[in-house]
Length: 252
Ligand SMILES: [Zn+2]
Image (cartoon, rainbow, N blue to C red; front, side):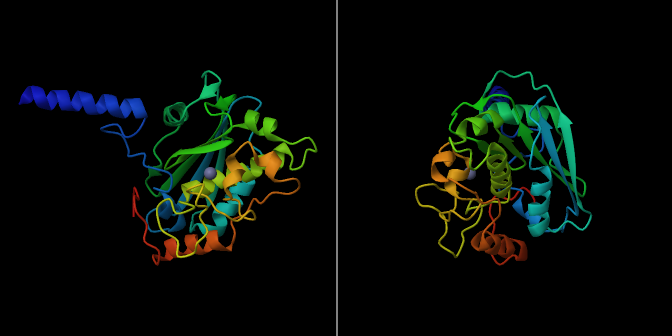
């Protein structure tokens, strides 16, 4: 019996290590959208810090924009603070979701820190292991944006520019942390693209499915959205007010 228990503990800790999810005694890391209410409401977290961890030469272009977008929808009377930090991740140049989680939890701290909510935006050198991915949300408080892949995705007319794409991708990933689209709730509005779950079917929304894909330069030849559309905002307001029920919240 004792043997079985010990075996179970070892087995479950090795599984969690393998997928980079919850360790037995660590804070729960959750799924993208799992800290949506923690951001949208002020019940427990009245302050927020958005941390930008970037490799040398990979400075994020959209730090202020992300803060602006979050301020528009999140209730943070104590304010939202940007913290930018250059870090040598010392990783190879092909990133898995697990690699992203590893550097975030190595260099960052708990998402839920007293009355402060911490979200992490990682800007690594290199590409995701699927190099058609420009950005990815890997748990409830962590996203990564791949600037090398964004550079590659620019079309021959250079519109949208790499900087414009990066701004859209960064806000898009923040939108996934907010639970968009239908990640932790079900919208009464039909705006999720059936072929791209978790994404908007509206090409005027920053949550449009092509925003975090390298096909973006072929799909847009001009400006791209870096704002939530009316349907996204409707969902976020419904979640914040409690009208829309949210699942899988790490705190609520
Ligand atoms: Zn996406």
